[in-house]
Amino acid sequence: MNMAKKRQGAVTRKTTETEIKAELNIEGTGSYDIDTDVPLFTHMLELFARHGRFDLIMRATGDVEVDYHHLVEDVGIVLGQAFKKGIGDKRGIRRYGTAHVPMDEALSRVCIDISGRPYLHYEVVIDEPFIVHFNAQLAEEFFRAFTHSAEITLHIDLLRGNNAHHAIEAVFKAFGVALRMASELSNPGGDVPSTKGML
Image (cartoon, rainbow, N blue to C red; front, side, top):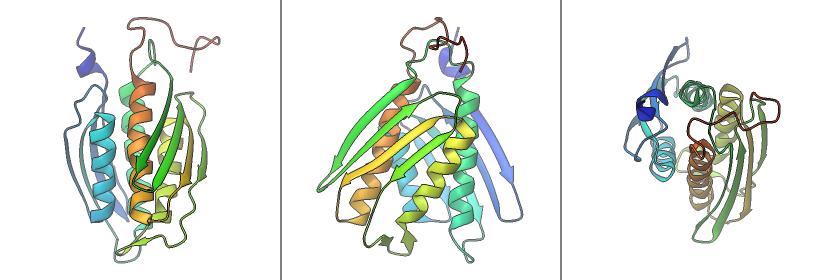
């Protein structure tokens, strides 16, 4: 059985505010082709894909002349849906993943449980959150949307960091690493890792 082909998800979502298409391969190598209307956000998604070794193709446009919020949140929805499709019935996965990632003075910690229960704890305090025109606080909206669409438990903490770019970069890298770890087939062909028999 070709597990790489099976563990993929593709989603298209169009609203009056945004239009997003995403293809995610969980069994990837970290290749990406990403284009959103927000360059800094595009870069964060590239970091997620590369360091998580996910293959990701994404096109996202939206009403960024109003605010970046709609686009960032909707990308989280679509990427979470693609992940949920790709992970399938969750048989044989590791389920849990944790990563600490430094970026110069910044240090982030991300813990994930592919639990079937959406929950986000997000404690990332940045005193001066603006990076060019992007407000790094919007990252929380992306992670909240991803968490609910993917149905995972996600804890994100910025343990230290003064530079907004370093801080948010450390978070996205750690998210990729932890999600890859949790998604890995630690027991290929095995049962769902839960005493309930389902996640």
